[in-house]
Length: 213
Ligand SMILES: O=C(CO)[C@H](O)[C@H](O)COP(=O)(O)O
Image (cartoon, rainbow, N blue to C red; front, side):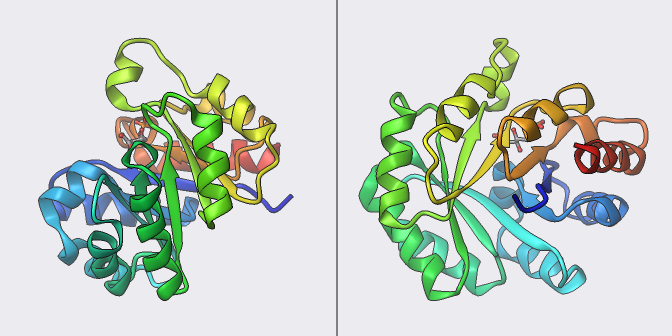
């Protein structure tokens, strides 16, 4: 299996703080995620800024698209996004639209399974349609209620679909190696890095833990 990628979730609203944090952690991560609140607040300009500053990094825009998939995602791929997310709960037509936009730019579409009732059925159907990445995701509100992504990761990993698997939801140093061993290809980390006293040190620790598995 290819080495798992580490994705840094940039969840601040502040443009300069976001660019600053990306700069600090860049040596240790593979993908920059522009989080949903951040992309709503800052828009395409932030995609263009990060694309210009970090040409070697993958850039995920966490649009969590709910409708008008192709129309909404196209400008973000055009601005340099490598991956855009679309909600599994949006339905197959919207997912198909984002997949179409991704393919037009040689990029990737990620299905976010957050709040999808039948995640296995959704993963199967969207993988069949050509989705590139399946996102197992316990959101911030669900985390606050005590939920974790581990059971869902096991359910999706065992399907053996022809997609990469991304996992997000409160991943931290004590859990990151279990996530890798459970079959994740992309490990998303937000608060455990940006909330640390030294985000660079926290990112380095996550990198070392992932590489040691
Ligand atoms: O997409 C998100 C929330 O919807 C977050 O970016 C994702 O959950 C990663 O952050 P954390 O590691 O803090 O959970």
